[in-house]
Length: 236
Image (cartoon, rainbow, N blue to C red; front, side, top):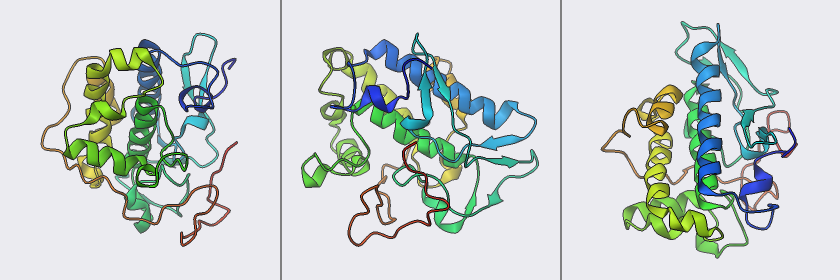
């Protein structure tokens, strides 16, 4: 995969050049289709459990492929949920991981975080931002409440700014994927249909995205609760 992983291309300061909006849209659709295949088209459902930009690989034409199945879990078709130890990457973990009873909707939540990072051009936790903006979810929630989502469209890309209205519309998909109640999140096939223009995002969404769990990042913030090394997925 000649263009490496997605994180090289979407974070300000970490990318070789800025991706244009049409390229980002294609990457987002590719990721959604990949997850829909894992969840719905395989003989057994596959919950990836570690969706993040480092695990999305890009070929020479920026076709995106979901990679790294080291933490994934197979689920029988008749299983609506499964119990497992917490696994994944801090910042991308759905709230229901606290109960250790999860569904494939944890991948939908992680996809929502990745989608926001692509649209905003920043990491979900970024200490280079002002302290009140360290956590992308908190910024997103505030902008949703104030109807100011244009403010968080990637400011390092003139093309993203020019297409700001369309970018904001896609942020509604992220809102749907980030519902705290996993039963209110869409299936990944529904996300694909929205991205392809076949249906619309559900209305009456809950915009309380702020994650109630202690935030953990690779530098282990003071006062945070660390995950066990056996289930914590760091950069590859």
